[in-house]
Length: 225
Image 1: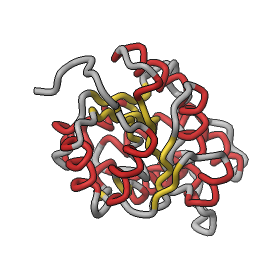
Image 2: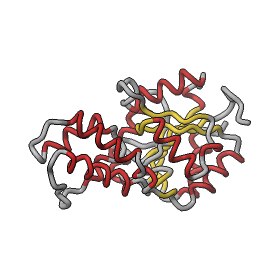
Image 3: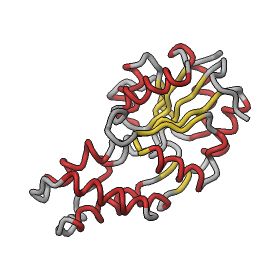
């Protein structure tokens, strides 16, 4: 059993675009939400920008293209479609299991820090057999209190009794970097995700890696303890 409030280095990992390629299920659920309002999705629009932020923060931007402001209804319909099975239109990135195992062998304690609703994150990680590798799975909750990545990370640090000096964040989008830096954490940006190396470089990721096999070494560089 993983020990609570461990000493040593802790690693917070984003989910979408970091651990799993969740694009198919997320995009299909946005399309379902658009259709539920009576619109045919415009397939010429690249919806990659929706992956990472919460639907609450990004749905108005999606609907603006259709001249529709019924974001609350669309979000409800999005989550209904996603929860009925689209969340499993998903795949663990090659090399992630080995990377997580290498981190644990090195004595790191792992947490998930995702803007996705916690209930969905747990179902996905259970589905892929990854949950036992994590001390705890943290995500957003109804009401929006933890929608901002900075607030979510602060909540994890406080809940787990972690010092920022012993923690590193791993993620693929700008909000992962900005949220971690707001809490005094260094960030390893993963270029295989949805933001890409340019986005991560622009917002000042402390390290950028191209493959999961590089993760354990990058953590050791930033947090040698």
